[in-house]
Image 1 (tube, rainbow, N blue to C red):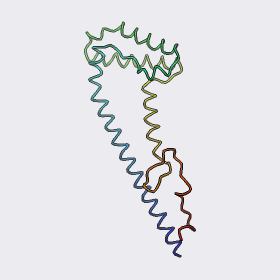
Image 2: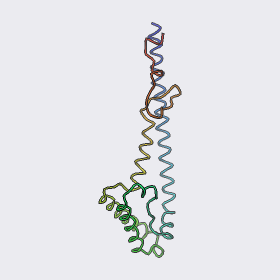
Image 3: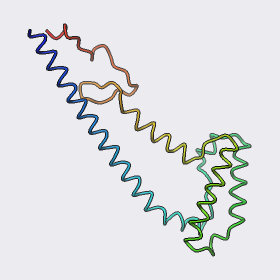
Image 4: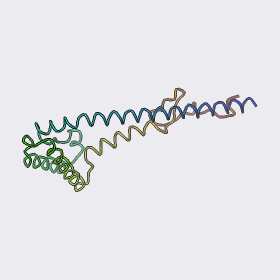
Length: 163
């Protein structure tokens, strides 16, 4: 009887803690998404100023290093043509916004043609992968997920072992 009582206490306490942990993860994820949204909106105006001053930006060196030489050449050449086509300095903010939407569509088509994902898609995938790594994994006694998502045998309590 004691074993049954202890086992039920362990399982009910564990589920309550797991539920609370899930709520904390959801709250943290929602807060992080809200902050990212606010920061992105804050930098949208800044992006127009950067394009006015420097032209349409190239992808990061990290992204370009993951591509073949032909892919890098195709992307940088396309951006060179875009920067040569548009007089960013003499365009209004509204014109730049509309043009950026067109340019991003052109680059998206180029990425599809090259059979690669654009830098924004890769960053989003990394962020989503990072968000998922903390979910559904095993947790230790402090309810912290193990780094590799595994659970050691020491952490598993069998109902018969609790007595």
